[in-house]
Image (cartoon, rainbow, N blue to C red; front, top):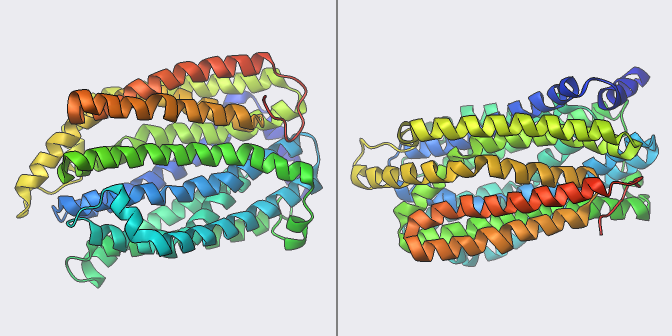
Length: 471
């Protein structure tokens, strides 16, 4: 058990940075890609119906499903980054209390969210732009995936964050990946075998919730096993005895991280409202694109999540040169992947889009129009990929260093000052083409601000404390 503990510290502190980043990031990238694939599988199988209204409905519900990610970030990234910093200072008992509190906090907030969505689901869907053709599908999907399924979804992601930040990246990725593989198996079973025709959206929702439940069960097992030799705990007594200083440390990073995801969700809500104001086919096309463009995002988020504990540990231990090298190495890798994906999407936009919607059904005319919209949108929006990576990496660096206020400032400026205003302006000037181009404009301005913010933060880097805040 002691050897495991030493090995994890050596990985963060001594192993050459490229190798340490690969060790942490590759399992995370794999789990991100498998998660992406199973989300795409939902879209793929729904697309086999040729029903653009089903596709539009799942696009609408994406915004409230993504709040599960925000809640898991609150305790998973907030608690996980603090665990890594406490490990860097060899404060293991405090790290156990932080991890225990994070687990129970995630459970509580997931239950509360499920109750609130259950009470207000129909008004929320109306606000998001559901039409008479999409409302019933959206209601069914959200009821199962969010009202019933938020707890296993939030818990599984929170446990994965905590495991990863304690050095158990492979175990975290196995749990999330296994859930994704299971979803790929269950999707066609529930959509086309168990449930009657017309219930494909409901089938996809059931498959997703069952898969998230299985992932949560495995990750809970892996977490308890890892806790024997790592600063992780699930004991309620430890959760209740957490120090006030560390409680502040969780929320100092967790709240900005959750707000960042929440603002991303608000931006998606605005996209859906503006797209549905044109017509349901524009909304369906945008929904397809928002799934496809997650390919470079998934890889780059995997790189950033693998980088976070290395940066956090070395920031806390005072090895700032190694921390900066980890940031530079991750940046080079992420930008290389982003530019490659831009080239591939420009060349193969239409074939990729056609995978997600069947044109040989009775709905062929609307399907072809949806494909035309999606092809245009992906060629425009993919140009934002390198800029998005810069924004992602800056946010993860700030979280790793405990710079909650700087993370929050970046999130607000990126979404509320740049992206959302560009969205309304360019949609007004250039209709749906402008709506797609708003992502490039918003992320570009956000990336320039992010680089400036990171430069100033690194320049002011001083001896940290676990709940260090940037002014």
